[in-house]
Length: 332
Image (cartoon, rainbow, N blue to C red; front, side, top):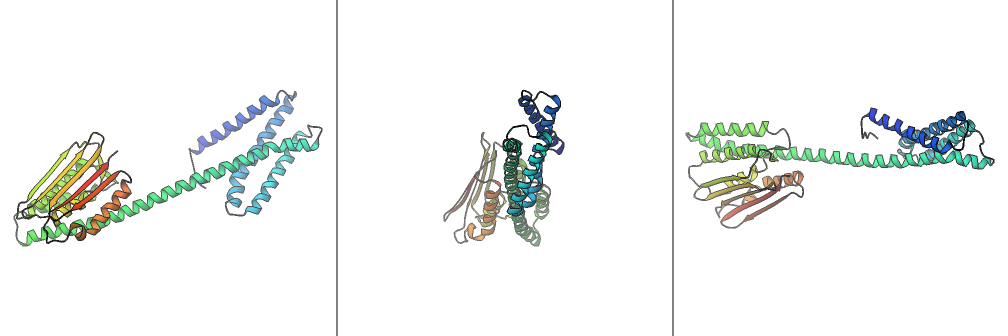
């Protein structure tokens, strides 16, 4: 069990302070009963030593080495032996201070049993917290691995489509090939060097989206209506890296880029809630965007579930003429 709530030096100081306070309580309660200073301090020190021995031996030795390894019978036997030895130690040090022998042993056993039970309860609590923390760390590790896997799926998918577009421009000796390669290099820089964490500034993600749109403008011979508007974006706003890429790809790849329209609107309100809407005309003869790009949309849904659990709403609607995505994310 490795659970550290504070640095070791601070933890040691807390332990020392606790036993000093316990000794002070004993001094206040026994000073009215024991007149001899020597006998008084002997009683206090024997109680503190015996009680701390029970607590630490039980907590650091018996519980982890025997109870924790399901050796319950041996644990109970050794616990009983420990308490008996501590009681005998205290009786030997202080002697029979009461007329009744059995009462003397009972009085000497009360602190030992009390600290034995207290240390056992604390050990169970610490183990419970440790197990919960390990479970959370494991879950976070699994989520990070899954997110990384989804991102690895996303990037090649995007590059495959974009390189095909640039290749077709170069094959037909399009004058926009060089600018398209420049835009692609800027987008690659964003994908590779901005991906140092889960979130990046929203303004940089918007710049990436603008480069994506401009790259498609350069590729298209036709001139469909393309609008991209932003509102309420601040430098402090953070967003998951490339979270909008699949929606952009779907709009341009599966939409009507001949004589249709692609309308993109991104807005952040005063409550730091982001509203993203993308709407494009479709060609009825094509398969639906959902069918064509099921992997991409499935991945973005998984990423949203992992990064923004209970903090997002995603709606995808399509009819014969239009395909629309509405995404709401609480950025707080």
